[in-house]
Length: 200
Image (cartoon, rainbow, N blue to C red; front, side, top):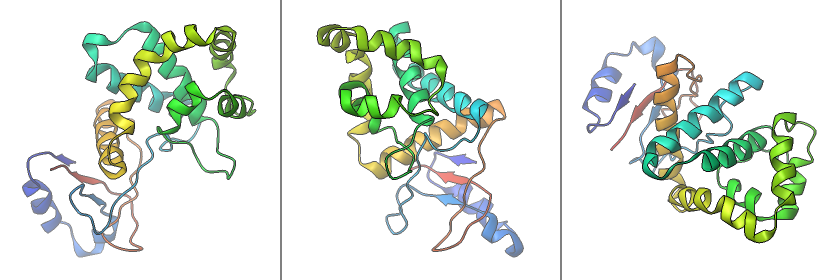
C-alpha cells in the first residue's frame, strides 16, 4: 500500500493490524530519520526472469519520467547496462547499485571487470562488443543522454533516492502482479513479509 497524501491512511491501516501480525508489517517512511531504509532496486529479484522483469520496470519508469526526451538509444544503453549489473557482483560479493551505472559506462577498467564475469548474460555481449569498438567520442555521444538522466537519481541524498526509486518500482510491479516480497521493519531486528510505504 502506498499513501502519498500525508500518512493518514497508513496510520489507519496500522491501527487495524492484529497484534499477532504486527511483526509482519514493514513501514517505509522517508521522513523518519531514526530508521533510514536503504533499498537497492537492482537487488530485488532472484532468477533470470525476475531480474529481466525488474530491469524492464526500471527502464519503463525512467522512460515515463523523461518521455519527451527518451529514445531507442537511451533505452538500449540503460537496458544493457542494467541487465549487466543485475547479473554481476562487486569484488566483495555484494550486489551493484544504480550508482555504479555511470561507472560502468565511463570507466573501462571497471567495465572490463564487470562484463568479464561469467554470470553476465550472453544477450548483452553484442552490445558491449559494439560499445568497446567505438571511439571515445562516439561512446560519449551514445551515453551522454543516459548519463544526464541518471544524474537526477545518483546525485540525490541516498535515503531519498533509494526510497523514491523503490516506491516507484513497487507501484509498477504491484500493477503487473509481480511485486517482490517486502522485508518489513518497525524497529531494530523486526522482520516480516508485509509492505506499507508512506510518502511525504
